[in-house]
Length: 71
Image (tube, rainbow, N blue to C red):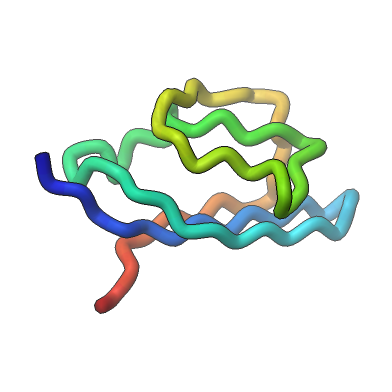
C-alpha cells in the first residue's frame, strides 16, 4: 500500500471559515472526492483525518482543493 500525504483546504464564504489540514491517502484515490465527508459546521479541532468518509452534498464549500504535497 502506497500512501501519499495530501493537503486539503476548504473555504466556506458564508461563515468565513478556512480550514487546512494534511491527511494520508491512497494514491489511487487522490481524484476520488467521494472519499471525503465535509460538514458545514467543521472547525479546525473537529477535522477527522481517518479515511472512511463519504461525500456530503450539504457541505456547500466554495472551494475544495486537494493536491499532493511536495516533499
